[in-house]
Image 1: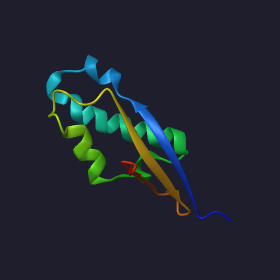
Image 2: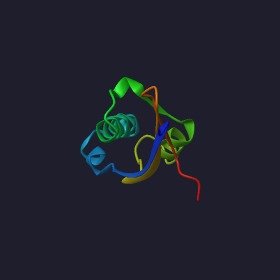
Image 3: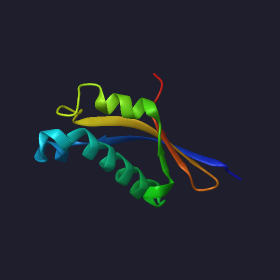
Image 4: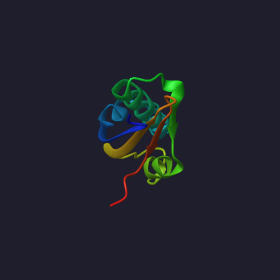
Length: 88
């Protein structure tokens, strides 16, 4: 029996560029949450985003988030998904 499932996911964030500049980084965080919840088959409330992912998106400020981000998603047996930046 597998107690956790792990995936490396590339999340495109290019639709953020169509939003107002003052809301881009916060919208990128919402997109990460929705993308991971869709691909890991869990509700968006069960997605926990690590602070390293948050810092990576907000690194260049609110106006210039990255156009894509690579994350590691780990789904535990209780249904919670942890999202973090993969270690190189």
